[in-house]
Image 1 (cartoon, helix red, strand yellow):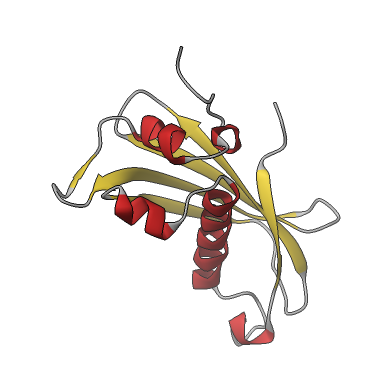
Image 2 (cartoon, helix red, strand yellow):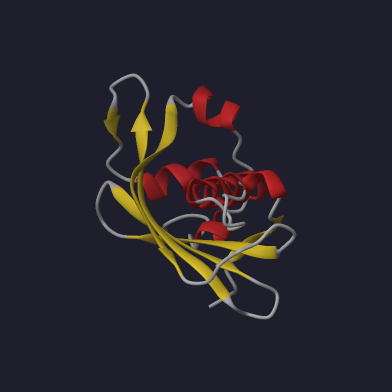
Length: 145
């Protein structure tokens, strides 16, 4: 299996709390940034999603804080999709320092919303497969033959 998609981030001072730790809510922003960066790298834009009448939705997010992050810390935020047979998918993400220390693990459950019907589409993997220039970034093959 190939390495998961990742993006570098630097903890900025204004993102920290009174103890100097990265604020808990900012981890969600980092995870979201990595997910949208993956979509962009795969060739999917917000405008492209909207033009197809769909959009990704977050249904559940769990964060496990492992080690503190301080202003100036450099991290990589990974993003790997896991597909099942239903209307939802999982996204596993890790926030890791350059020395390999895991600062946080983020697990999200998402879906693809039909923007007109306001319901989850039956096969979100097929939506990504159809829209992506590189579906392999999502762990998907180009077509199901």
